[in-house]
Image 1 (cartoon, one colour):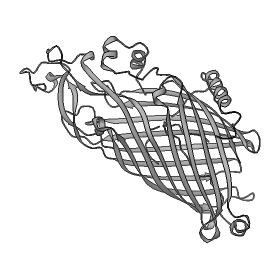
Image 2: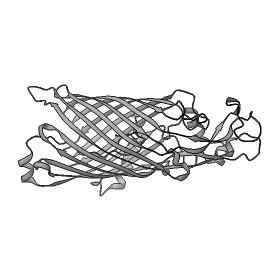
Image 3: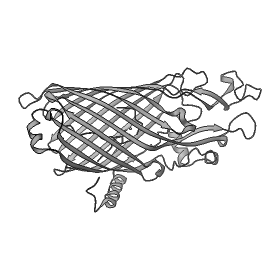
Amino acid sequence: MAPTPPKGPMRTTLLAFCPLAAGLAWTTAILNPAAAQSPSVTASPAPEMRAASTPGGNSKSAEKKKGWRVAPALGVDAEYDDNVFLLALLKKDNLAAPSSAEAISGRYADMQSAKDVLTTMSAGLSLKGPGLFGRSTTVTPGVAYELYTRNTARSNVSLGLALQQELTAGSRLRVQGRLTPNYFARNYMADAVDLDGNGSIADAERVYVSGEYREGEFGADYRLRLAKSSKKQPFGASLQLGGGYYNRTYDAVLSGRGLHGPTAGAKLQVDLGQRISVDVGYDYASLAADRSNQVVLLDEPDFGQDLNGNGTTTDLSARALTMVDRSRSEQSLGASLQFGFSKPVDLTLGYEHRWRSYASDWSLDVVNRGRRDTRNQMSADLRIRLTKELRLRLGGVHAAQKLNRAGDPTGEIDDYNRSVGRLGLSYEL
């Protein structure tokens, strides 16, 4: 539906299997004896809650007889993330052993480690019964809690709600939303103070504040069946079209980092046989930011200007106040291939290419003016049904981002690589 923050990628599993298993066992022990009470997440920092797809067709009379049914869904996921804050390799090393200047500035406050094991405990309900024209309607509320082992300031809660209405000829309409009331992304530079008066800002003279935001999104999508698969004719296809709205809001001092705007997407789903299917999808978001005056650090010789007002044009890392615009458009194109090895086992392989284009045209907004980001992401997800209600999930994601330039003067935005491994257990009636 929307960018992800967020709260959104891929991870290797073999390296992480031991800490993942330990995290999963620890969380399961906490939940028992009430372990019958917890669903699952995306890759993103914000969990995705989605209504279960239910087939259309002649469910009308059956739903009238059965009335409304309630089924719980509970889950525990353990993940190992080798780059929680999306840092460049050098910055990961700095986080592991911060300098005294970085400690004074607050650059890595509450950022304990670039690597972490997080446990997601989730619970949801599926309420299913007769809706419009007597056809099946499913309402799915859910809640998920992400618990970070080392970076505890990142622990967060997400709430989700989905409403799905089955229509004629296998089509369906779905409306869904998600809210994360508070999420710690990382620390951002909010100001700089030239304490020694030399015109240049040293690392210890920067002032960093906590980057916490509230995030929400809602949207609707419509799926149209193009061809119905059967035993005699295994080929099937459907087209899904959707749109929505995304909003991310920071506290006042970092309000210029907020984003909001419409989103849209299309997905073609094709069944190639009884056990093989392919999805191809495209997503687009136009996200606007509030333009605001912010402190940046610039080298005066690059601009031939006295940016800090001390009468010279030769200062490096000079404090300058300029208009900043983080508005951007975001597009992604992805595909996934699903294999059903048997009824209880299936494997999904995925690839996504995402690109962002920033709209700023302010001459001193060097971080965003002319900026282009690209990210390639690969994923694998193995799901095993252990019993009728119990499912095991093993997966991994690897993502790599590249910028069209060498980072920004504050060192906040840069190229990065990220790998994640996941081990999950869910209970669904």
